[in-house]
Length: 501
Image (cartoon, rainbow, N blue to C red; front, side, top):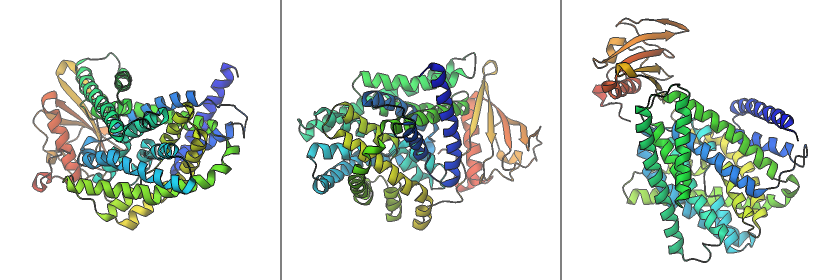
């Protein structure tokens, strides 16, 4: 295939995938299913494009997952997930261990496979998919705490599952004691966390103090920093996925210039990574081999959804309660159990034992592929119904207030761009009622495509865009005040709302 033909085919696939995202959004179907379908149509059962290289698929998949995790960290609002992180960490470690063991014990007994293969299958299926969770949950009105648990868990649990799959596939785990396995896992997680926690703040500090000549360089620099953390952690034999997620989380929530542009760039890169990843995995799969994998896949998937995931959530909730990390109601536990979406990550993880030549690994890949297709098709569209039925939805939850900034270096000031979102209590507030500090002022309002300089008595409306000029010294105070009023209205201070979260 010539370069011109490859570029044409690639552009057609991307455009078709973008159209598919629109269709998926309207129908409620996870877009990953359509992308996987494209791959199957392009493969040997469709157009006949041959791709059967699990080693290359593994490398491309890990890079794509790093991009997706970076976007997840950059677009995660720390104020929303901060209270949820302790429970999410428990679910991403103890919960993952419970899920691996339960699936392994069940499939070993039900399918008659050996212990190591059963453990690999359990480890591959233990991780919830960040892309699937982010894309579905950010359209679903949930209380911040519950949504934060699912988002943070999907970001954190990739690291331990990747470590477990690699160790099991290399034979290290089977030849070592449980203590040694847990110690190696803990060491990799600590190294990855250390690298991410070092690169994130250092990168944010540098970007705040270096005035780049073009605004488009800031998103590139941020994404490059996240990849530097990934590569640095891997070189130090740590968890690259934990490093990239933590560094991106810190950078995404730091006071950086052109933060909204950076988030947009990261989202575009993640969508491209998802499209390429899912299409490649569809190419790698062989539809001719899938029928023999259906029955074992349905058995393993049913165990995962009906037993392993609920048990991992219950154990995690019990541990959190003992450690006084917060109480999780049975309704929240039920929703967390159903919302553990699996997507591309388990399929990518299934290429690791296949690339390592583990016996029975091709069957594992086929089974995981079927599990993801079937249970994502069932789970994703039913989440809104499950949230309403369990009474955990929050239809009145206001969208988070987005603040974009551009530095005014010579004036030691910042220009903030604020859009009043749906559900915000900024609606109806007069400019003077914002009570911004003396170093800040609303200089322009854009409403219905027309801009004007507001008076102190101008009332704000939904979808208004404000330009706020503030000195660098009081910028944080301005943002906190705007968020407080957005949540609780002009009497935010009376309600104890300080915009700190």
